[in-house]
Image 1 (cartoon, one colour):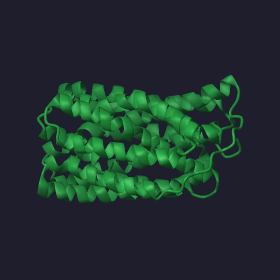
Image 2 (cartoon, rainbow, N blue to C red; image 1 turned 30 degrees about the horizontal axis):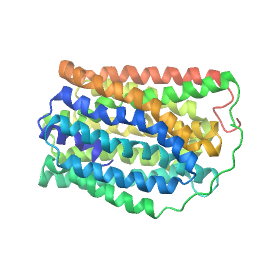
Image 3 (cartoon, helix red, strand yellow; image 1 turned 90 degrees about the vertical axis):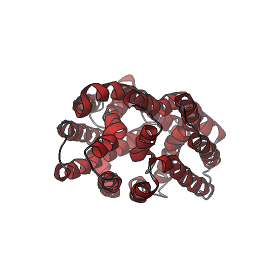
Amino acid sequence: MGIQVPYLPLWFQDRGLGPEAIGIALAVPMLARLVSTPLLGLLSDRLGRPKALLAALALAAACGMAMLALSVDFAAILVTLAFTALAWMPSLSLLDSYASRQARAGRADYGKARQWGSASFLVANLVGGALLGMLGAGSVVLMMLAGQLAYVLATLALPELPRPEPRPAPITGRRARLGVLAGIVAAALVQASHATLYAFASVSWKAQGYSLATIGVLWAVGVAAEMALFRFGTRLVVRFGPHVLIAVGGIAAVVRFAAMATDPPLAVLVPLQMLHAFTFAATFLAMVELVSRSVSEHRSGTGQTAAAWIGSILMSSANVASGPLWAAFGPMAFLVSSAIGLAGALAALLAARLQPHSSGSGG
């Protein structure tokens, strides 16, 4: 992810793709996720062997990345992206389910565990930026493949979890279930506000004359900020609750992306990237926690992948829209991102009203 998120658009550009094609290419993994994520979530819960499924998906995704590295024309790129995403994208939600189950059992702190994921993202981000400066944008997918092979080995080292006993869902009642759904949609909206950033920030910064190493540092600032939030994230979500974190993330997205629309200088970009702690990390942690509180353990995989499915719908739509918006308006397209963040904040407030006692730790 530390290579894919900031640098894959540059690889697309190196392959000759224009803004509209880049938007479509980035949407393909999200669309593929719509098909495979809920099915694999159900399969994970049915099999009761999440570690084995994670390892199999990791290997399949590595094969897909190897094929992507050999792809040149647009159609081949889309096909190999879709194949890779069918395995890769659902594994992210299944890994969240695995980690949240470990946290529920008292064997791990999810926020701190997620911090290490961000740390690996940061290392890949910085090393990738330096290597790209030497090897060029054509090496992006090969670096992604190297990281994926390391992930395959990591999944093989995970302990298998015992099959949980079926229990009733913690959340019952139509109003409460609507509150959970509204909270998931709110978090997904704030996450979707990042679509233009992920697709065109590196392209925009490169056009402004920043080196690939500088672009890598800018992405690294955001990741360092999210690491800081994840470090204390569990305490924050217990103290304030998921809905408050989502609302704060949405408000931060309004500020961040409205400022990005002005093509700010480097001195302003750095603090804007630090807002990633709220626009991404706070909302992500809140959504995982909201689902974890709302489903029984034996439905954890289904719950997390269902939330990811909703997020994929919104993110893929935003990705498809980002290409034409960028082609037509350039950096002003970030104003749409700002509006999406505002919608997420408002949806979080609605969700809190539907579940007035779910914001804190008291339930």
